[in-house]
Image 1 (spheres, one colour):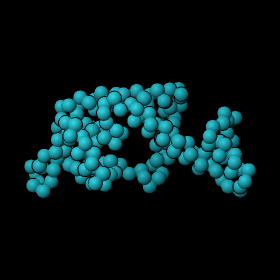
Image 2 (cartoon, rainbow, N blue to C red):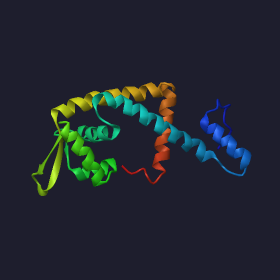
Image 3 (tube, rainbow, N blue to C red):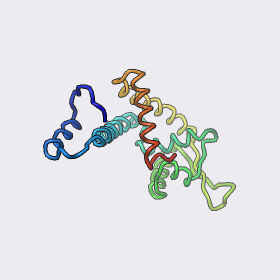
Image 4 (tube, one colour):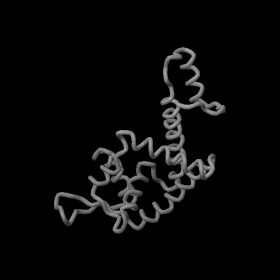
Length: 172
């Protein structure tokens, strides 16, 4: 990495400084980036839980509803499609679907094209809820991103896209 501007200092810098004191031979450049990504992910996860709580859904449940909403009308996918998109096991998906169906936010019905399959469809109530909840979540993200100006936020998005594309987890 090239020379960095004077740093303000955060928890990750403290960890890097500690490693430098006891193991100056280590290259901690990755830790500087990923330590912050991990901490940011945890902090934003907590913010997102708070943003979705007034709607009675967790982040995971929000993800199911949002995936159905993004699929377009008629907002229907199979449990397998949902599991693949959300990278969940079928058991994990079943628990979420049970809760969301019990709340009247989605319904499961037989797949007319596959008598062994099911379809999961967003209800009108679920559609209204997800449209409100996505706004609340985006507001929380925008508030957090306000620490950067628009240009720097765009640069960060571009850099993270590049980094993600270079990892094995970059599969959509």
